[in-house]
Amino acid sequence: MKKLTLALLVVSAATFSVSAAAQFAKPEDAIKYRKSALTVMGAHFGRLGAMAQGKVPFDAKVAADNADIVASMAKLPWAGFVEGSDSGDTKAKPEIWKQSAKFKEAADKLQAESVKLAAAAHSGKEDAFKSAFSATAGTCKACHDDFRAK
Ligand code: ASC
Image (cartoon, rainbow, N blue to C red):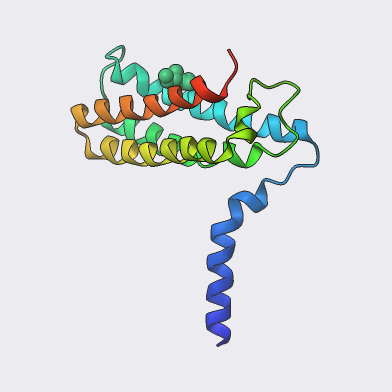
């Protein structure tokens, strides 16, 4: 029984660690957090983009390393979109909070596609990598079109 309780605690801690770790004292802290996560994700996604577009030669190891970071970072920004953080140093549109199910769906799509992108990068197959890259980029764009101000 004790073992089961401990196991359940460990599982729930692992499940909730991301949201529990991301508690914010002020709205501007949440804004800074989500923008930071998106900035880091964008930097690594950009390295993948350079390869996907043939600007730099495809390197399976570099692709896999960067895609793993993108897939990890893709989990983080969402906890920063707390109520009351729609104004200030942000391009976040009010629709994020008005259409929260649609926003969550967009966030989930990015996460799902970035996991597939990492798998494709690990396969070492350039064609699979390129198509997974463009599917993932499509989820970035769709969310920006609907939920980010110009
Ligand atoms: C990037 C980046 C984005 C997306 C988006 C895809 O490299 O920083 O925000 O791709 O432009 O359309």
